[in-house]
Image (cartoon, rainbow, N blue to C red; front, top):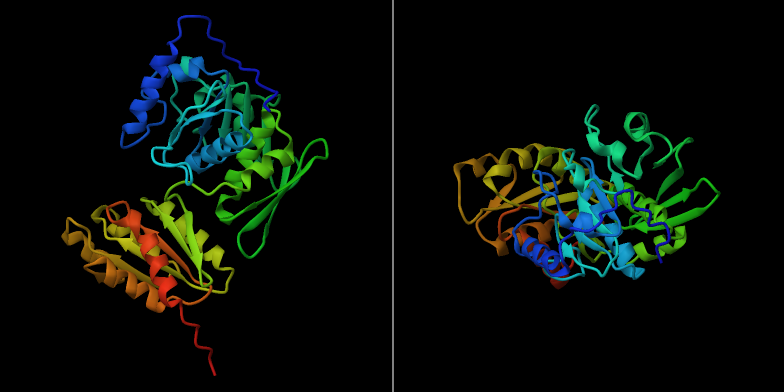
Length: 374
């Protein structure tokens, strides 16, 4: 299925045996977190894979990497991956996957050991002046067209594939709102055309990056787009947990102000101007100020659930506070109306279960209609 595997880095002998690689991957799978491959680690997986793909930059590494892993899995290309969260529909510990001789996908940071530089880099963008120092060692770089000028200095122009709106990009992209998400339509350098539907409009750039990476591997445009259709998301990374009675419930593990603001903006976009955004958050003390500030950005309602370990800082959080799950969920579901988007925020238990509780609550009674002004 993959025809363009031309790794820049070839390792001759001295590699770990198969059992050692399996042991390393299993150890990572058991851990509470998967770390990006900096910290001076010479990952033997990179050196032993036929092709290594690093997903770098500030925006959406886990989502982009997961989309690419899904595309390659659907097309039976036997990928392996080490990502920051589990893939929805792939089971527990699916942040780590091990194929049989296919490409390896990892999240990368700006500091990567020379022996671990990937063959292909999917770059999601970063602050000015923070282009990875190793970018000129990569065989192929895929990035937003807006990053071209910064990357061209290091990556050169021969191995740079860009995507984005307007002229000049390798893949010219047009995103169109469809009511239940968005459709991306892209035109390639040889008049190829692809289109793909993305449930969350905020993930359109991630989807195009993953598709461009798949095409760089030699996969036909619409073949890659067709494989992406069944992608369900990354666990709690702006994931649509479900829809019922015209209400969408989104699960978010966002922690920092910028991330929370971006997820709430994505939720507002998902309403299509026909509904309101409501937030149900576990009052993690570390998130107190961030949730308060973010929730002031045109969010209709904020309900917070007191955490297992209370702190005086939770009193700084805006919105109604409820001491138990049932009352918090009821507060949200009683106010929710058709067209609304409910965003579940938080990293402390029981945040991982709240989206399901909200869907159950909405499914039992359904939201009431908005009262129209007379």
